[in-house]
Image (cartoon, rainbow, N blue to C red; front, side):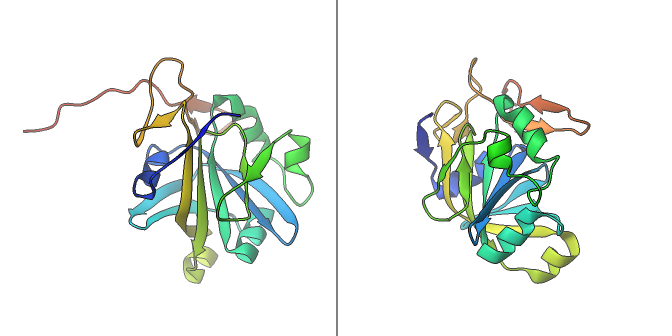
Length: 189
């Protein structure tokens, strides 16, 4: 297992700011599930907040509504096959953890499992907004704990050094891209 590095909550948004595909994990009433989500984003700095789309027909939605919490797990290229797999089948019919060999560990503040092998983990409590949840399947969450793999994130930033693991981004049809080389732009005068 890689070393988990605590991430200052004021900088937790930086784990998502570049728009990676995430794995949404949830648990309630003895059940747990994980689904892939390409639509998530940071919303605010203090307290840190995120948004994620969770379709009303999913087991994840049922578990999130029951528990009032979820985790966003940020997978790397090594997890692309599992990411595609958990996004392709229903948790109502499949134990995705068992079928796809996903190992999980307990978070610090929520009951939703965190997935081994990810680059970042955000533990979130739902900010109830029933109208947008019902109309748009959009869930808001307050980030109550955040962690990152020290090989990929440090000093409040993603690492882009050669050999550092990178996040993945889904572009449909089973295709992903991996975050590329970083560069700095000159600031305008």
